[in-house]
Length: 167
Image (tube, rainbow, N blue to C red):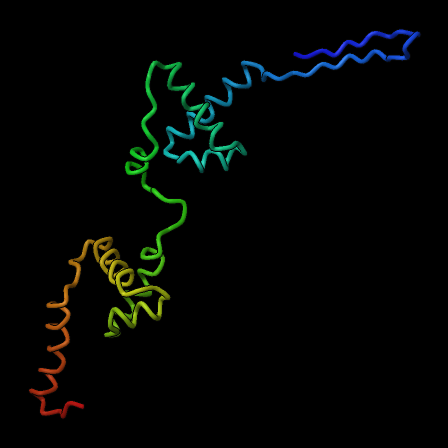
């Protein structure tokens, strides 16, 4: 608490001003914020998400979490290690997950990985990663180049057996 007391002296014309500044938040407010941040942390939110939802800075969230863990006699796990235990590890959905459905649709239409990349606005590595992700998330075997060639041969072989000329 800071107070500015200037005396009123009729000889030198000074005025008296009492200024009171409260620099410290009440302990109850701090503890309530600490409990709320700890609750969100325990729900699996990342520090950035907690800060955004409560309107705090990331630094304040870290300080509140550190104080909360210290009050319990524990040490907070490093955020980089904790991130890998969370279902959503990143703020934005990665590109390969965003394009997975479109990439597989093009894959089933016999487009090459390079063509899929151009269509989806990414490179061939990201397109292949999207295809692999989609198949593994559906609990299906991820197609390889060998299986893809074998699938391509089947219609051609059937057409050949029926004496349909290949173009």
